[in-house]
Length: 338
Ligand code: SAM
Ligand code: SF4
Ligand code: SF4
Image 1: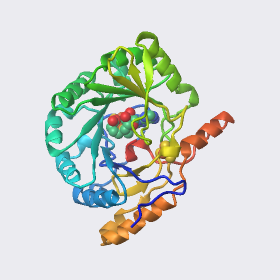
Image 2 (image 1 turned 90 degrees about the vertical axis):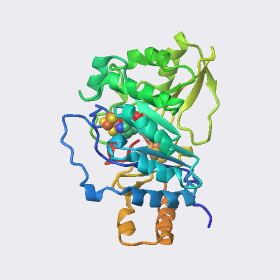
Image 3 (image 1 turned 135 degrees about the horizontal axis):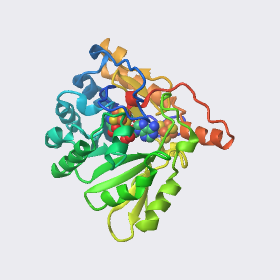
Image 4 (image 1 turned 120 degrees about the vertical axis):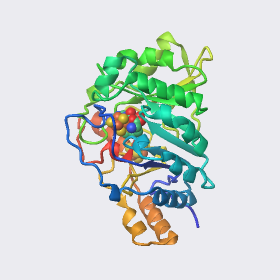
């Protein structure tokens, strides 16, 4: 059976699985701490068996890369069992995890042993006070740095570091972060602050563009562009001219990459989102729990992907150039995991 293509001919090659909507941080740009959150009741969250079954079906439809995310995925008990199940699916050639890193010191070796290939740790500041402020008073900088070291020590190298850059908050740390995470053990990715969800009061003025980020680094650590690794690589890559490894920028605001977007996102409650900025997800849990067989679930996945027309970031770029930012209803980032 031919693998599905969406309305713009894009295949489905990446699946991001959110395993929980809960988080032990309250990052200002994702889950501002002054809001009240209602989390999913446990019975609504997909079990590991359900996730592994769905993942196997997605792989049969073209998915090669799987990333576990959240919320904070390490809050989910015995995550290694899920990793082991996913690593055992023939056809998965990249199994990764995005985490805020706080719980990594205890978990990194078991995750590696279970078959995890790579880990991305989100770290937006190297100053204890700034880090604490950006994480809503709940993040512990030393703990996250220990988590990064533990991941490297467990062999999950190169460890990717994600740093969201916010105007006037941590932009002065771009060079320090670049210096700290150079070399073969790390790959630092700066992320342009995005208008995900509806809670973070995003405005275009708070975005530091990829161009500005790269120029700032280049002034102190000269850079040269590096080729994209694959067509659906989200980051613009640069190499340090002195051989000190690479750095990247995810420029979803200033240089959107919807044309190559082949990612689907499964929320913890089993809804499938075909775009980070979708307002609604497609329910897979109901058919799954009502006894649909594999063929019926595959038909549903193909139908959802086959009718996909998402290109939100490109549309946003058009709107911004016409001075119309606009906030449409959309899912919160902590529910689908970035
Ligand atoms: N809790 C984990 C973490 O923070 O790594 C995984 C989930 S988090 C939603 C996934 C990624 O989205 C993180 O790297 C986070 O920094 C990023 N993120 C969250 N809100 C963002 C925003 N408004 N703009 C850009 N990136 C954002
Ligand atoms: Fe939690 Fe990650 Fe969102 Fe921060 S970015 S609040 S760590 S889910
Ligand atoms: Fe993909 Fe939507 Fe992001 Fe465009 S805006 S790259 S379609 S997730």
